[in-house]
Every structure is written in structure tokens, then in C-alpha cells.
Length: 108
Image (cartoon, rainbow, N blue to C red; front, side, top):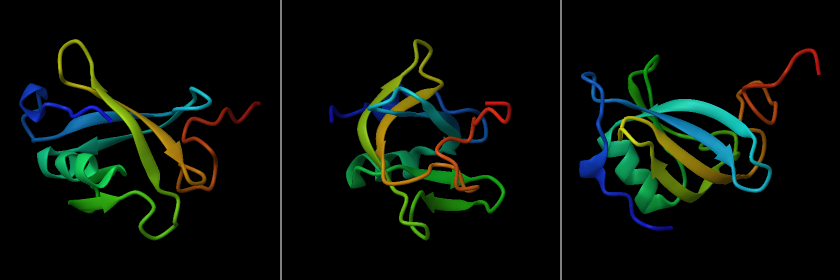
């Protein structure tokens, strides 16, 4: 995985940036979550996605309790540097509801 230059990330005034998570193999968008400088750095070092939970106001390693880790294949910034795309290999369902993606179509 190519290193991401953290100085290029334009975090919001609350210190957070959105992360769009996409399955490397299927191309499906799995989820969206938030990161701060510390959790993004940890994600890069660990090779697994670590987020910042706004509701719990704390670090959140995806898969820490479920085992459904999101192993990073690549991380890229959008053209403004204010949104992150993380391509991953999921080790199970990405959604806390047990579905493959948080964007499941209920009519499908």
C-alpha cells in the first residue's frame, strides 16, 4: 500500500474526515465512517481500518469485537483532500446489522 501524506488531508473543523469504504474485489461501497488524524495514522500503520466514533467519542477498530476486519488495499484522497476512499478486503459483513454493506437495498 502506498503511503498517504497526512498533511494533504483537509480535516473538517471538528478534526474529522469522511472515509468511504469500498470492497476491492466487488467494487461495492460497504460503508462510510469518520476518521481523525490519529485513527488514520493508525489505520496506515496497522493495515486495517480504524475509525473515530462520533457517538462514542472514541477510537474504533472495525472488527475488534466482531472479527470482521477491513484490511486496506489502498487509500486515496479526493481532489479536494477532504474525503478518503479506502479500498479493502473485508473479513466478513461490513455492517453492524450483519449485512455485506450498510447500503443494502431493502427492495432487492
